[in-house]
Image 1 (spheres, one colour):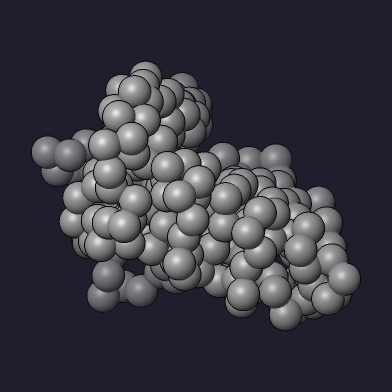
Image 2: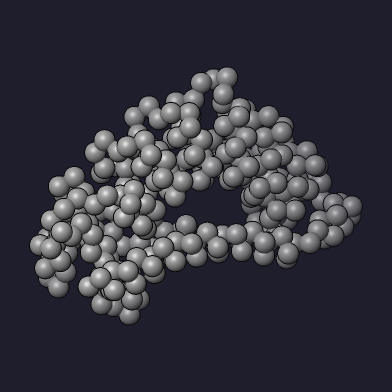
Length: 253
């Protein structure tokens, strides 16, 4: 009984394609371990599938257990769009890896909304309609601590939220109306190009000798290397999931 088949793409990039069956339908997924590229599951169409891959589809004859065997499929940005009546535990597992799937749930719980924005604060845009007004500020805080750019989703953000956002991502300064010197300097600490491009006019009134001196005293390189290393290890985790899937599939074939 086959529910998932992993094959190596026959091109110079050497990626993999995962064919699987879910709720009686057949799908394919090409995992890309990058936060900058959209990772989407697609329903199988003979028009999309090259002839060399079609024989694999005939071997799929059972539904995949996503909680047990999902692997890198759980990182897809639309897995819950196709899964019929997903269990609560599956929803939690998917959202921890790809919080954007929250948009496919009807009336998600407080816990699921929390998981989604902890995965990426920008998923706040999908959960706001389901959060009680008295709980909104707490969710706002989680969102901007995770992704400062989520500040743009918050109506009339408080000073504390603005400060938290630029501490996470200096580029969020562009979403702050009339920033104070404190906020501008915190943004400079977290964005090496804060005195360049679109942000310069925002902080121009603070650009005096003291501001430049304080900004230049900041250890930019270690900070940016630390942030980039976090991003790298997050992507490495997905790489390892994909690699282990492929090795397991080869050993079983």
